[in-house]
Length: 180
Image (cartoon, rainbow, N blue to C red; front, side, top):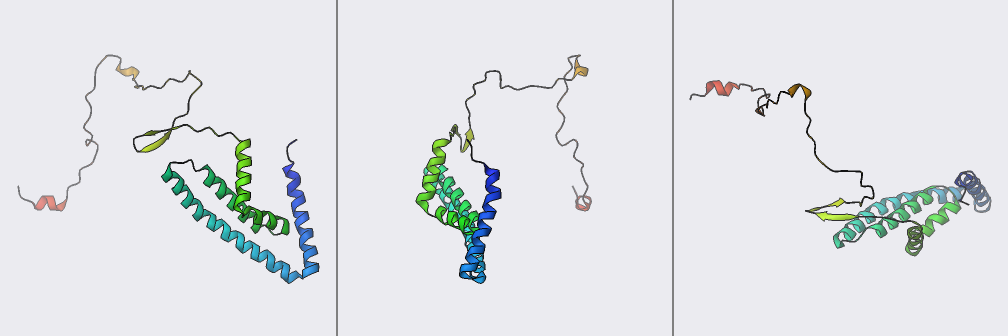
């Protein structure tokens, strides 16, 4: 049975608000508000840092010729950590802090990778990479075509036009002053 995500969107705010109210009674409202602001600022910084780290890791992976899948999972984990830290509440902060730990992100990435199937086919042509998926359907035929106008059925051929024929030529005042 799949996880009921709509229930999560109803239950999570109730759990978080209850936790914030209980913590406010125990530690003081000002301390809880400061915690929420601090976790928000840390979450924003984590998302910013994830962008820079991801760009560097992707460049390193591509330079080595590796698939950057690991770097992408790391980046996604960092972004989710930042998002969970931005959401006010102790449960989401705990999840966000767990996602900041690299071995936890690696374990989640391996779990997702084993449950998912990725098919990538690429080949090197010239200086760039192009996708070259293998086709199972033989009904697609690659080819070129030429549009033939029915009005030209008399087999007359047209001479190609001069490409500059339609470009207006402007006369400069400098052209008038020049002598041949």
